[in-house]
Image (cartoon, rainbow, N blue to C red):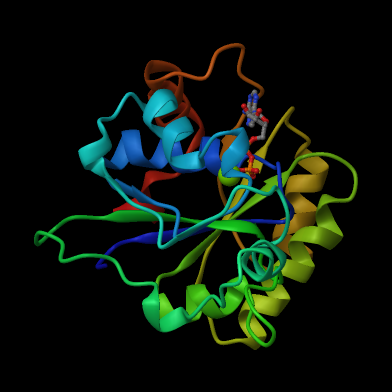
Length: 210
Ligand SMILES: Nc1ncnc2c1ncn2[C@@H]1O[C@H](COP(=O)(O)OP(=O)(O)O)[C@@H](O)[C@H]1O
Ligand SMILES: [Mg+2]
């Protein structure tokens, strides 16, 4: 899992899957969503294959996959399953393979009665990238996410701001969440491999992704 990245978000629906697809395309990485809920509405693995234009072989199957679009601890309980972190393991990777791991929801989403998505990131020992909205509310949501990760001793790479650019919110996130904004994804008309590669070239600081 060398050079791999764990993509979390300040919330569900902020753009984690779009950011993951961008990184998979730009870094020629492998995609993995260890815990998927809401699979009845389609999986993020399928979305990343479509967005980034990658074959299934460049993805890792989910460790847990549930149909209901609810929190992992609830989806697992409804299926009579307890999510066990020890069972969340990436398969053997070739030297130099990078994995983009996408979390479910935000960092304090419960995965069982006592553990959270944050514990999955910590257990995998992969630095975390936070997907945040550019809009009102983002300063507190991003600062809370960064603080929870720091308290848990999880390494933070930075924040990617998604949506119409708001420079004041960007500066405030850097000041109050004390994490660098390492990329931006504007609102895209069409989400496809070329558009994502173009955004990485123009709106990401690649020194954070070497
Ligand atoms: N930069 C963007 N431009 C246009 N649509 C976006 C963008 N980022 C996300 N979306 C759309 O917003 C929705 C939620 O994004 P997604 O990446 O699935 O969020 P998450 O993985 O955090 O739940 C999807 O329909 C996605 O296509
Ligand atoms: Mg997603």
